[in-house]
Length: 183
Image 1 (spheres, helix red, strand yellow):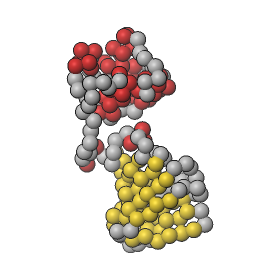
Image 2 (cartoon, helix red, strand yellow):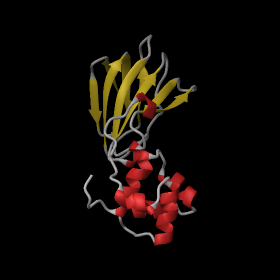
Image 3 (cartoon, one colour):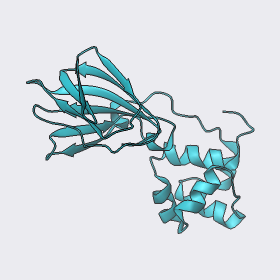
């Protein structure tokens, strides 16, 4: 990383490296999530006392903060994955990039068990892309349906309600990317 990195950007990288949300960091420091957000986007600057509190919440101190280089994580392993199972809809969402909802796009690995489907998502700004890693699916967008199988991909602007359902006998796996983050 560049030595010219702004304080807010460096705090953001430390927070992400520590697998904390803005809200979790704010709670640790008795600050508001809004303040952390403004700080990370360099819209405000902390007092020295507040900076010390934030750095303690991140497990470091001022001398280390200004002397250490923050390395942005590029490669993520299975240990970084957060999984949320939904037994009613019979699926699992694997957030394969930690805190990706803070980025410009949010990739997930969606596992649809036999008979399973994703949540019905409302129309929103942005774009969505998917790649079917395994199985057979039906992509539902408004009143239209589109079949896809292993090796197929899809791309659309989410201007209508949309969801994916498994139409095969085995687990379907889909890499699904939303930009901006939506999952």
